[in-house]
Image 1 (cartoon, rainbow, N blue to C red):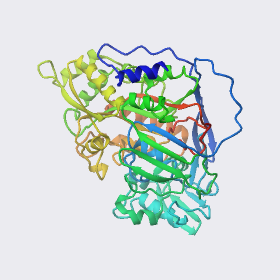
Image 2: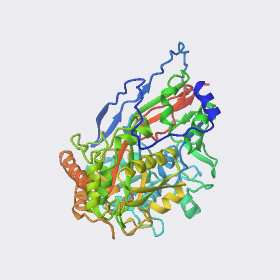
Image 3: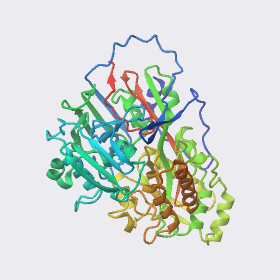
Image 4: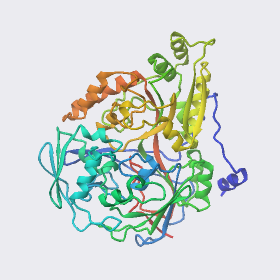
Length: 570
């Protein structure tokens, strides 16, 4: 294959970026079509995204007859970064979720089309009133360590979730403390959840959010602080169980022979993190890996010419963002923040780095969210206005603004930071880009302990946040001072203060009317975007690349889809 030969000769393929403007968007191989459908499941709306399969340009041979799914075999998967951990209730990063979704279960799950379905609960819950949910649990289910699942494990999971167990609080406890009044066992296999007020997000979060996956009390108490870390075991009830995690080399999960549902087809799945894009591509082309979850997008057009390769794409919740720390200069000044945002050409950044696969961001919501406003036009590229605002803030040619962008060593984030660095240089702003491994970046940027008292040690950063469902929780978790993803010091001690936003965020997540939630969330988006604490550069589409013998795949907003139904035709 021409592409493989070129890569092997060159050794390393670099993405060249600079101040000369965006690269031309490649001619599309096929017109992409994304359909968003709202389905009513009980009272919870979920989003279904139609999968797009990119048609190869080379005519394929007549398909051979496939008799049906085959059992057995090992699927080799690559992604860009290692998980932080495999712990249900501690942030594990996107890649951690990609693994965890195959080893954990919640009371409710989501099928391949994004529909809420029963999980460890036998049915969708009974709802005697607007704040009461009664779940009837499956009997005879075992955790991977052989212990029995019952109501006690549900109570333990929610006690951790709500921060009721000293020293074992979930990193996102504040998200749920304002909603859940109590969780009690009516008997060994019946659990009642009572809310403080109506909260329509409960079921979709229970089905899609790893923090509500059920934990084994015995396993967690036995391993203590080591639970879910490299070399240790994460225990669930899912279709696969952790076989081994060899630091810096691979994570292997194996079929759970005692799974309560339909067992998976695969024997094992082996995950490898390959941060460098060209190395990840070579690994795929040489057959070392079967599935790339985060492929180098500059090579997608060439890959579609190979009839033995399949590319699948759909909308996602993957927000690429530039964000700042409002607790320290220079970004404690709103005018400086806004000036920098005007100086960043978001579409140019996305085109250079993602080759037309990431439409420009606008506001805080993605286009598939019910609160997204298509009329928004925040921070159009205007370098002259940016220079004028910086001058008003005291930054001129004689006193230029200088700051550091910290990011991870993943190619895409280094490239984004480099393009922004070049764009800001055009208006006289001096930017240093500092890339580091994921743990070091996390230690520098992520709130430690209680996010309401955190003061991270960075000025600006480039990274992502990923969302999986259209909820009011979406905006609260990343912009409320009590949210674990509020990385900006927003309404935190020493950070930029806007109490009205806090009040509206709290009001929106308890609002029962969809129409009112839309109004509230659009107002919230406008206020937050005007405050300029983070800039949505764009929304990267989910793009996965696999060899044609990988069957049973799919694509939807939550790209960490379960791999239980995947099988190998080889």
